[in-house]
Length: 418
Length: 174
Image 1 (cartoon, rainbow over the protein chains, first blue to last red):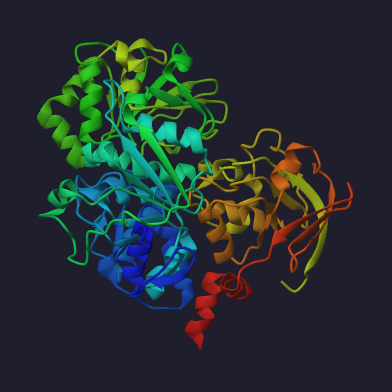
Image 2: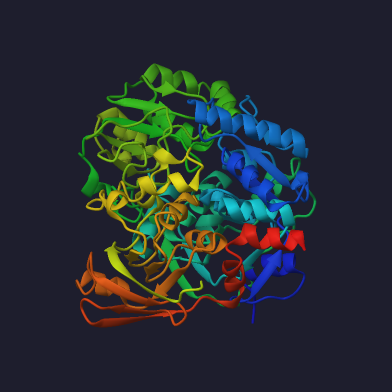
């Protein structure tokens, strides 16, 4: 009987064979925290341990509210600077041109690596599965405990195998696939499970697209989500791996799954998640024509260079009909946009570009909605009030659909403007 | 958990209650758990009065996937420090569940409660009697009984200490 990815990765970390359902205690390879490192540091100090277990395994990336928009945020940032200096945490991405959205930076900088056990005090930590890591989000108390002890317990999850064959039609992308999947199995469809993406359509995807899939694993309740660590991944990490502890692990062909699903990428159509849940699927034909007040191209889900290229191709030489906020996922992505002329394309089209970070995704700043307003967004959550106002409405969609909608001032089918 | 049989009123919620509905991201900069209850369920349609009217001993009752979404522990603190002794739901998102255990906060898995909520068999204001040791919930008002799973051993140790940090602290002191 073969093993799933989760059984292999957790077994490797535990140092013995494991099966789904067993509880293991493992040492995390990397622990990521963003602006919430400040309250975690306060909790850490209550434990009574003087030093973090291994400072080189802890990463801080400020992204939720950068540069600080209020004194509360400024105080948090200050505490993080002091704590990282005091504890010798060198992997600290402060408010500089080296940072960006935490999950993007973790991948760009070579922390996300195949077979590693990665934890983050953010629910979208599951993103690193695009590089073949076992990565999952945890709470603040648990992160403080991990810093102190260098250990974390996991129940080895059961696995959901999603096989994707065929190829996308023009105007369709990974975001449409993941919104379709979540719409089918619902917000709790993968609760506690490890989601494995298999098949030729996944192999054909760029790592950026795989990050979009894995990023949204949490939106169906998954513990982690993962794609095969193939030649593309090995090439991407070649000169930047932050440790040599990694190992390319993948599920056996005869692994045992709790559930298996198959999709043909050719059947997927552009779609949105309607307010106020991510599983509230609507094909574009049903949603198009809905008036919007704002379009947002950003977040850890869809603001990589590939996403911004796709959006810019639609916006080039045209004018947006509603305010459109573009936030590249990192300063590396921003520089690449500059080099390729995309920043100019966005500016010429009337978009507003802000510094890399989470921006308005969770309602902190840079694009809060007013009551009664509707935003179409490339982010991962459309919960009631997520972008700062509970009387506003958020539709989630791909960068192509968001760009097409920005031009029309209403939700639009990207296939009509390609 | 010295007292294992609790009695109180029900506040009833649906399936997939996300962390923004329990504790909105607008208040994330708050780091004092005792100040968090004033924001509980502010964004939940029809439950905006929860924070003002909840009494210590009242129960939060919900369907499937309670606490889905973000990893914020505020969503645990805002109920714990409001005096809600236990959450009674069909099941929980995994991060919410871990956060609850790690903060010594009991959450019970109650079979069939999601459907019972939809069928109106458990409603706001119903008087409930909850046996934490057995994982049993009696709806005294409507005369029905629900059964749940007791907490697993590993999790019991952490909860008995009052949470993960207290548990580690006691070990560090030894």
